[in-house]
Image (cartoon, rainbow, N blue to C red; front, side, top):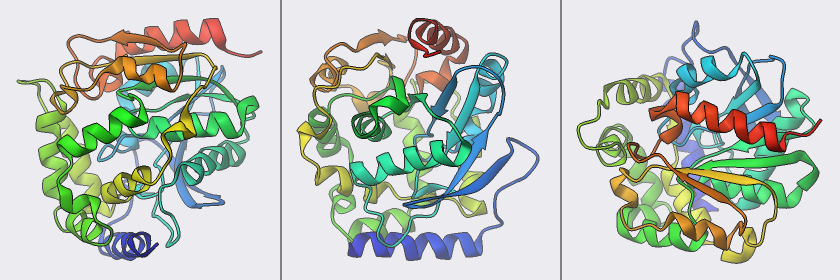
Length: 298
């Protein structure tokens, strides 16, 4: 709980010093959920609803090109999870699976969506799985990216995340102090060698300057407290897109997702890294449309 309090205080300080969300790009609004205020983009277009969550330090603005491909046929909702982007964490928000799932369900309530496909990536995929378990009638299917099993994710944490980040309070201060450097360096590892990281970095840097938060330590510590069977044995339709050029996941087995969702389909985007949905948006959109054609509810 102390780590959560520190994250909230630091995020509040950053927001106070920042300039606020830039206007004139994707229109967003702040909605209230049971776990705190959340920043949401809602296309309000016709079609099945798909909900996205950026994988920090990415923010909603990173999805502008992808959403332009999707909104002619889908209703697209995207929100910053509490503790990321412009959704400040409350002092009791510890990034537990239940709290994350309640953020998802709270956004669905706020935008008036009865059921949706959740298109989440990396650690956020576990919050999508938990939401599906808590409210199966509201989650039509999952479209994941770069989400292995929770056991495999913990092994990834041990390999990739520096030990201070895993320590409550120490980790929160460490990440906040180095938040711009961490965001800048992450794209070197996450994207394929030789890829142009400039647009990713520029958008993330602009958000951080404007007061966005990136509570990486909170997520790492929150997921470390969870039982691995909390997201095991799900039976809903699921497809996961995997980018093998993501050097942070060099030793991660994408097939480990079957520990959580035995029937999940896994598709490799061989040329992509950690963000296959953003790196190859046209191919991703085609897969998403095909998945919804098979599984969208009337």
